[in-house]
Image 1: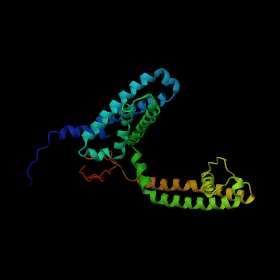
Image 2: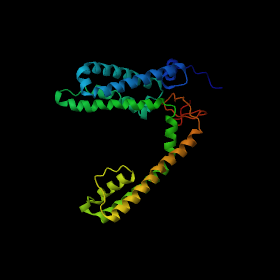
Image 3: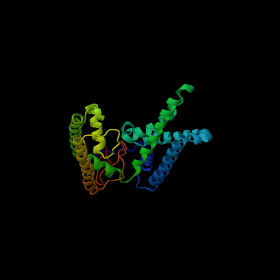
Image 4: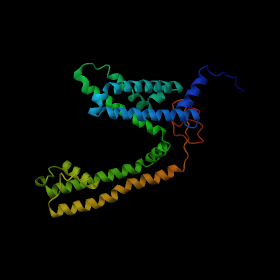
Length: 275
């Protein structure tokens, strides 16, 4: 029998902090998620409001202070997330870890870029704050289900996209030969652009065939487009149905913070730590 090993002094508070921040099946975790979602929504609305000239002129200073308040809150949240996992770098380099960092960096960068001539650059950097909206997907119960279906169908969709690209190259080359430069099909890449626009049923109308053969080929491509659009939808739908049969746990890994594990998982499928 192995000797008794006392828990580290910080084990309790780290476990409790992890439960509140990452878990969604406890009262404290649910309350944290609700508050965080509301905060994210309000912060994104403030970013959108700041982009409106009239609101920015009248309430620019207020929105500026609000933005700094949100930045400090998200900074504290980011630090707490790193403290609550055993492998902070594992979470920091994960998708949502990067998103969390992108949510706070631009505001701090605006301090390091002085001078009125740099205001446009600062504005572009501050637009990165809109990445906060992507954090909402971490708290949607069906997000893992959708990601599982997309991952399972990636090979089929890759083959489908390759077939579509082959068709676009073939049709574009044919239209270049049939219509020629006098009809606007000045080169094969331009003709491929027309084929993509036609195949996806977008139809900008900036380029269009004028010869009977070109119109016939365009008509066939339009009809084909309706059938092609339904293919990836069917692929993802089938995989989504299969993924729905598997139950996903709301528990996050205490080591790296990863989510999306099976209900009977005893170890993290990303870092191997015990759940």
